[in-house]
Image 1 (cartoon, rainbow, N blue to C red):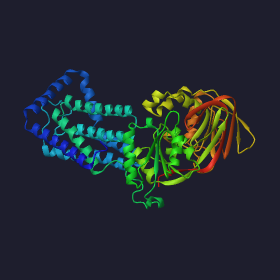
Image 2: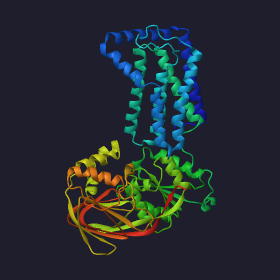
Image 3: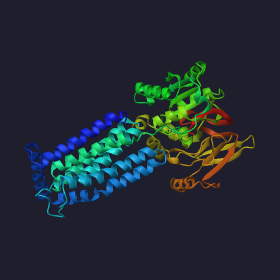
Length: 523
């Protein structure tokens, strides 16, 4: 639906409005097929009257789903989208409000009487066609379906959302018929009218974001006609590799790049080999689509080469993209990669027992933090995304405390007790949680936080401390900062780098490499 041309959207909208008009004419003149269906409403009201509880139930549905529900929900959705996706926000609110207003004008034009069998409680005497409740809920469901299509990547979650929206529309449709407020044709006309409004809204004002560089002065290198781009893709992170390729190829041409070369990651090589191949091809930009692990492998291989990396977040956490203000919507992220500006960020060098020397960009952790990563069920993660980490966290809440020593910038080791220790190059987790609020990707430093909830209920005040960004150090939270960090424990502990678990061990040595990597960020 989002890929339809403006002409196709207008054709759909015109067709649906024509169907709505046809139903209205047929109902007004009592054409036999429509009149027969409308008579079924009489039997529905009899069922309601004969059942003691149904009248109360349908009345509650009627009151709850008045016009203020779609407008209120549209306001909430628009407010949530407005900061990052203003066009989508305006589309949602504009289409819902316009549909409710225009529908009020249409009922006055048609001026159809209410059914004679309408329930005697709270009689409605306003014109009947098309149904206001049905149109309001249907247009709300339609615009939310558009938003879900844009932003929800997991197919099963999208299907669940679509199913819920359809059931909501059917519930309201049944309410209007079983209370006798409307003929079945009124309800059907309201739904068709709303569907036409959803398509017309997209034709007039697309919810898809425009290029973030639109109207800005071109960058110096954008005038070159020979700019080369390579794409490193983790194929399991997109629904269709071919559709993704088509999208990137088209957007690259529109932005003045040569046709991209493509490199797909494998189980044996999660990205380093592909990044080196792109470097050998002479790529000016490497676009990487995958989770934080894939991004880490590609960025580690390209660090120090001067080749910029464009990040298209395709994972569950996408912490690097979030902290660089790269949008999570795929088209918008590709646009930033192609038309954004380069920013030098730090890379953190990592070594330790039982691991080869490597790097991380986001965070490293020992203890509870790493136990969460290791405890995530991959099947559940595929179904519900980052909520799988929440479930794993609940299972690991009382991960045993560990004794550890920490040295900052080569200083003396200090002893601590904690359930987890996190060393971060970025400050914010999912849901904008400020675990390390002072951390910055370009300050030449890493930030360390130790969390020590002594009892199960200690997690609550600890969460308040973290969310409130209080800087003080106490028995719950301890913070440190430096260019290099060494952590030692007395027993093997779970460890993770950028959300990927590594072998258990007792030591991690980390050193910040300032400005080692170029990434594309919004202008």
